[in-house]
Length: 249
Image (cartoon, rainbow, N blue to C red):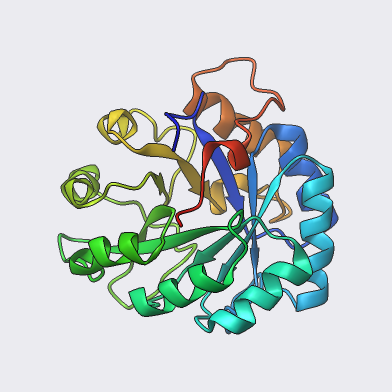
């Protein structure tokens, strides 16, 4: 990182159509998450659709991020080369060894995002003892998200306790994104997290969607952008994620 982003980065997750891409771009998102290798996931894409939507995202000025439970470096590297994704978001319990192998095989301009799963009710983060190892292995960015009591991870819609998030930060030297039930009314609740060193942006699924269609909605994403950036004008100007992150070597 060369410094803090000019404003909060907004990643919307789970695009499945070109219409989703267009809505995200129109409303001012920076990055769009595309699911592949998420068994049983409601927004799972095959490799061809992943590539098509990644191309559409780049053309619209968005950074496409592969969101996956996969861990095998060779398969993920081939996907990155084939589809042109700019981030690989490891959204499961991949090991630091898997991250190291992936970093060694990926092109340097592709960033690795490792999700840290913070359980609700003060149960802690299972990856907490491994944060340093993830950083040494080549993680570029962390994403702090909720894990539910019944073991669900990813797009749970469950909010995190800000105190639990803040307790995790002293172990981290990489920038981080915040996820977990975030919406336009959330910034005040997470004001201390937003002010913390390393805060880079947010990752949203449910609140980015129209309640009528379940698709990404321009009004919904615009409301997120305005609320989290403190910018009443909203609009499509972006924080340009590729320039903000320099993948680890």
